[in-house]
Length: 278
Image (cartoon, rainbow, N blue to C red; front, side):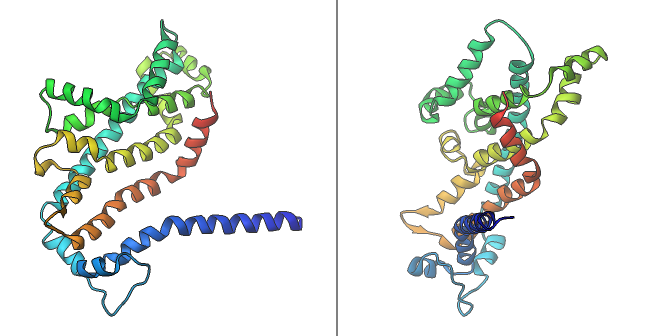
């Protein structure tokens, strides 16, 4: 290896170390904040230095003994995220497989519609969706949160791009062997789609877990609140529960971190393959 290549490699490593620090510092600041009282957070704000003389576990004790509905909100978000991710991946994969593997009338027109939906901001769709949910009499329910996003346009597009790179000989061989169309999809196509499923599971899981505006519009009962809404209720004009807010926010990061660690093996492969195929 030449000197120039060694220098470039060292600079690249230093760059990624710097970027990692930039990403990790906010998490470290939140972690440090969990060992401080709410009054100290108000006076000093978040910082990167842990003062052992004032550090305590009062916020953790409050979280596990006197947190009110926090864990109810947590499991509401967890339940909705799992349902939405599984449903979105399955339905979007079906639709994308139809676009990639079959020829039918108005195929290109319908795919252009998917692309148009991707370009429409959600804020423009909120009012029509809200009216539709009310007309269906399912407001203030978990179905109102999950159903509108089951067929995700971006996920359909990504899966379609990934599937166009799969040789058609695979599906033809399945038909020759007498497998049904559903058998081909579940036994042949889905195992090949693991990297794309992992990538979209992470992205859809993040979107669902952090979803704030739509659940806020359709939910009325505080027992059904998701975690972002519940944490927001801790900030009021009459007083802010910073102790619970900071430690609750820290624990809210963990499920997404675990999701990424579980699927990181396939994440980069799925993202790059879906980006260049087709």
